[in-house]
Length: 596
Image 1 (cartoon, rainbow, N blue to C red):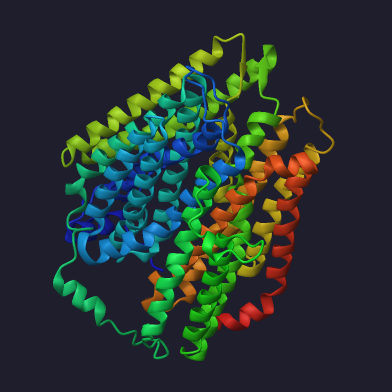
Image 2: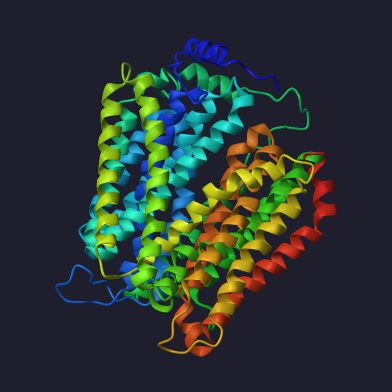
């Protein structure tokens, strides 16, 4: 692909009504999206890292550190349903944006609803917790799919720049996750849960304002679709691929999809209802000892397989084979996220209850130095980008830049207060949430290295990358199983095992996650990209729900067997899945019909 000069790039952007000011060789609009996503991820991960810890912490009357005293099974049931719905709601939010709202209004609506959700959660009552989680699911549905849609629309005439743009955007995601987990987590654990949940809401609100006031930078990108545009999309024909023929849903397809949707959502809501409130809305479906909610999800799965197989049979051979390849990839991704997402449930409980986090003397000094570097260096780099963006866009979007300045002044203030508090303490205990930032830190550290391998002659096939992702991630759990082997009550594990585990989990993620999304876009016909991404996110939703269900069993399995046995489950299952998917390389290569 031919490169384009900065001057030509800027000129072409201006022709589209987009601000042509370039920051680090990319449109200023990319960095507005970078920071909008950063503050949303700050809020999302800042809340997420506290949720399981808060729900399962002991009840201490009148204390700001009092949790709700739930057992991990109850907490996992609630979190699992929340995480599951987060991956389903964007399917509907994307449709609303495409047909009615436009990407920009959908993002603002989603961000506003999420701000309300974070506000609700700061009140720490059951009603407001459930309202807050519901608002976060609804808001994410509008927000999540449309950020990347705006980015894609900005770069639709510059495909040679798109990979680099997505890499920069991905850094925004991880920067937000990093600072959100560090600062919200610290406030929640060291000052009080309300402060942590509240800080997440403040930055969600400021991030919304920052994006709203940046409208002049984007021109008409992301505006509501006109009637003409909708009609043109509906009549698009892929002249380059005559096999890509319409395959409309039959009335039977629609009915079965409706039934399986009701059953799937019934399972999602019944799981926490039955475990927390003792209300089983699916008890009438119980067969013998098989719970009604399990019967419902089995029926939904059978109907799903029937619809998928019947639809596949109606496609031409090449399209059908490629879609089968996507389904195989989606199936194995369930095993990855089922294990990887233990970071939001069982690993939080493990870090709190079983890891030696106490520091004093030299160990405290060394940790404070490392923590200062981890905090200040990324903040300096991101602040530099803010300054660059402000220089280029202050004349066009001054209010957006002022809000951005307030955001960073706030982050610097909380960060400096945190570091000062730790440096002046004689002894301390590392916050549970601190370990969760390792994932974002290792992504930022290793992402460029891994991408260079994929760009070299050593680039392996997709199935090998998949298998590597599963096996490398499993090694992290193997290290935890080894570190926890033979420990007894009252004895805690060295933190090095958890840090190493997060490193291997991240390396596995870098091997598998970007590859999966890439192959969905390559293998699915242009007409079906949205539908197949919907199937992909359904697989992620299932993986997240399974992760929370299994993570909730940490105390049960530890009491019956051992903590080491619990981690061995997430060592053995992904390794077996990884070996199987790599052995399918000849079959998948044939199914992909030349797609690489």
